[in-house]
Image (cartoon, rainbow, N blue to C red; front, top):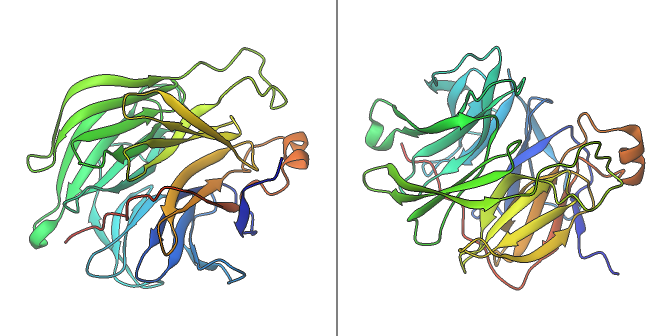
Length: 306
């Protein structure tokens, strides 16, 4: 079987996450969480530009007025330009000794949504927040959901009326109705209950589909979830039906996103941090970014508005 994936960036990082395609720059941005790095590249042999952070970056998003918004372990920051100063913007109500920012992106009106992770995975301390700075207002932080171990898989339906969010270790993807004007979630339901990890599982066992990590949505409303330890990306219909599986060149895909000039390239970040020597021998490019041509386009990234 021909491998449909191309290596977009061969450099292998510890835990790639939070990719987005910048349409004006025609570059892919992503982060290395334990490596404390922001990364960007145009691919096709272009070098990866690296920006070292003072603490772990969980997620990033472009800003409509230029630069980025960055969720670090110890707070939310605004960067007006690549490599520039990090301006403190907001803090979230968690203890950074055990909890940090993880998955996140912006909604259609430019609020920055951030989910967190309880790193010991000992208690359900992870939550989902939004930060609203529109019109230069003092940042308004809203806690929308909680009772999770690892918040992941944040995405919205094409019409913006459904919010998706996963709790990775608990193998569940949630859905809510979303009122974007009021910034409220309602009518909680399970979008997808994923099969649990078998006892004694090893990476050679391909029957385990993995657990839901980062996600994205295409223009038809289908939800694509990177299945950590599952060696695949799963494509789900809006009603939760599994439509397709895309095997990945790494055991641990972390987050997909659409990009490229026509938005028909599917990118995926991957992980090598904490993986066994045997697994890395079989998947030596774990930690790289891969790209695959698709026959459907994705949605352009939403930008942060301040």
